[in-house]
Amino acid sequence: MRDILDEVERWRQSGERVAIATVIQTWGSAPRQAGSAMALTASGKIAGSVSGGCVESAVVESGLRSLSTGQPERLRFGVTDETAWSVGLACGGTIEVFVEPLRGETFDAVRNAIREGRPTAVATVVAGSEGTLGRRLLVSDDGTVTGGLGDGIDAAVEAQARESLAGGA
Image (cartoon, rainbow, N blue to C red; front, side, top):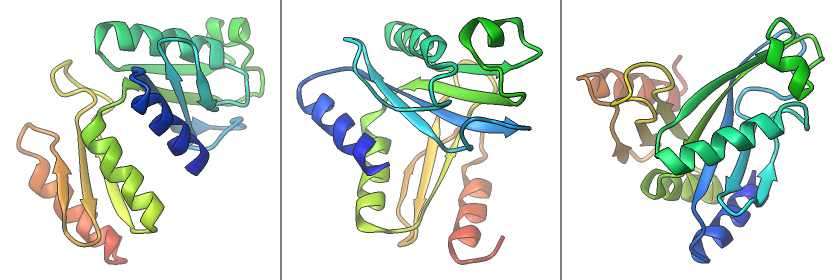
């Protein structure tokens, strides 16, 4: 993960626009676990992987579209999906990938937490209305809150995140 963070930071410093793709759910024999990530730029640079190569080309297309429109996309690949074979997902599992333009304020908070080894809970809206899709809320172990989910759910999510960070749920 640190390698991807370093690469994204270099891209940002050079003025590149970046999209992030994250495996958000898996079923069966999936090539990568939930949380696996890939970063890509509008100019075609790539770091990381969401499937070990099986669906990367489709994810890159989605990332470029997301950078163009500014809108996140949720993708699903599985052997029962006709597109799975065309992009090479033949492992027998299913994966869902969330692709979004990088948002600097939340990226910076997550990057800093990872580099400092600080526990941080991250909640991202991956389904719902276009207005809420991609919103993110981060709660750090020191109580710092960054971002927001909207629709009046921030307080409940913050409480759950704090409990999780404290070793609860």
